[in-house]
Length: 117
Image (cartoon, rainbow, N blue to C red; front, side, top):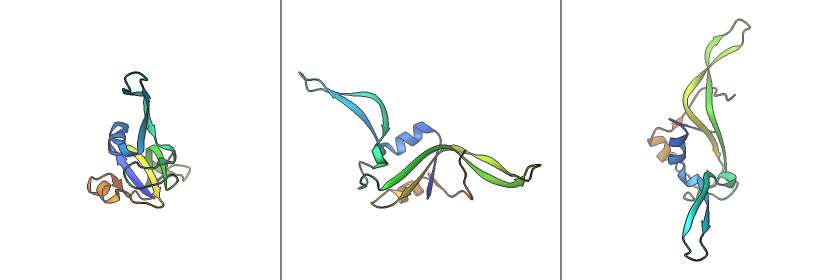
């Protein structure tokens, strides 16, 4: 599993732009194309730019990611602390992907025992 950390959702959408699409409408007379609605993740999370086909990536937008602090509460349950940022985790199965680029840009993190709520 690869964990990516962004400052916020806006940064996530900018960095992962090739995984998003947006509907369009074409004017019948002028053939002018305009964007309609909000951007959304491409079905089955395939990238337009990285050679992945539908079903080759599993991508989860988690937003919040927590990691154990090593301490326990009064009931002996592990205390978890929120890791700051906007988080996504993905499992690249096949195809090419920009993992090296994400690592160089500091988006890949390696939390110990990550947990989502």
